Length: 189
Image 1 (cartoon, rainbow, N blue to C red):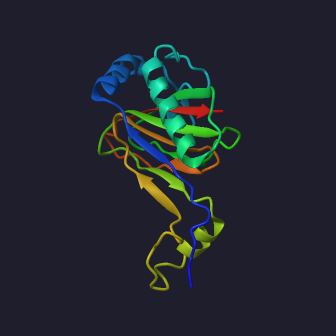
Image 2 (spheres, one colour):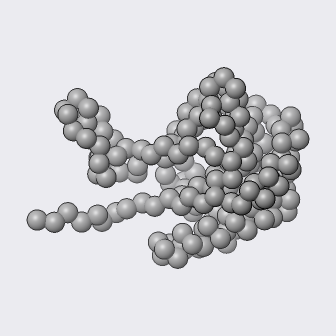
């Protein structure tokens, strides 16, 4: 007997240089007071009102390098443009409900800054069976494994890029009091 792993879904994680992460933080931090409340976070969602892609040029290059590598490994088509981007700043008590960016090809999250009180970033499995199975894991004494894993946690970290297919559901858990968590979200097509 043999079990074959037929339908894996990959995500890419990449840490930028400290010089680049400090540069991006120095550009954005003084402008965060210009963000508006959008849902349960502060954001310039699709307005791009506090920073231009030109100002983020070196980071944009890193995002495209990540996407190129992802495409080379997975053989998925390469994206050629950023279709949208926005800044989000989270405080204690802020979260972001489960959602996806399905009409795009790839999505990326970049952490401008984050501390240990930041809410975890969760990416959910696209396999509906894993959700059904995960509900029974503890009650029936089973251990989580590659086939039953419903989601993965990613700890926010300054300078970290996470790139993934846009159809994957993801969310941000509630940040604790004293949370420092600023992100730039990108959609690529």
